Image 1 (cartoon, rainbow, N blue to C red):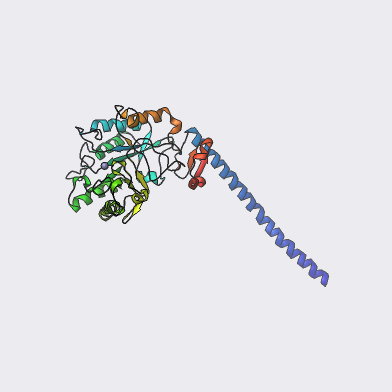
Image 2: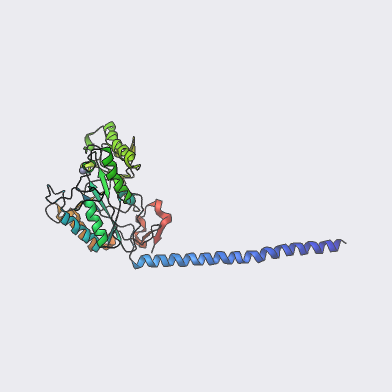
Length: 339
Ligand SMILES: [Zn+2]
């Protein structure tokens, strides 16, 4: 009797364990297959990144424009013809525009092999955007020219960032201001902060800095339900404490832009400084601009492709040649694709 019970128990145990075994083998296989598939996918992604010489730790030009007018009043102005030529050159050099907000938040979603460029416009002048009676941007405004360039060059995104003051593109009524800002927002453009009265923040108290930045933050927020993500400092001047520019009553900026004089670091690079992002004045090689404005820097980036940001086409990864690994910001380690 005792022997029979023993036999049943053994059978049960072996039956049970054989059941576990028959399930466990396919699970292990599935894990191995997945591992092999992942490894193959990572290898293919690295090969694809290498093929286009992706360098998502490279530098990005942030171009600074003011008025777009036929008769420039100063070196800050650009004629419509020159602006058209600038955009044709950027497209020919393989650049695709992204906004300042996309740049500072690391949302750089452009095709493999392309380079990001950030187009910025200061002072909210009517020459940048004026809508006609039909609500269409008037000819030769910055926005109209940018949209023409996008139509002419497939893949060239018509996006830019407009740093606004109380001038609000020359619009004085709330309705007109809302119409203009809403047009920008609805068409994928980015609206940034440039202080209420275009003041030099260097000489101001914390309270004054906060009012100058917070009032525009609230104004834009009320008009289009969207707060500026970035700030461009008038004259490129920081307040006495940089933190005042970043955060205060009614505003919180994820990036603060200066006025000069070099390309900017990739947001994934260790050298990136969100509160001191350089910009490049859009101007030909002449005088002070023979080295430090847009034509000179675009020539330099073209001649030094290993220094320039080149996308791998996948916004979920940060791709770069292995030897550049020491320059990766720690926060992006999990997204790294070194080849
Ligand atoms: Zn300005």
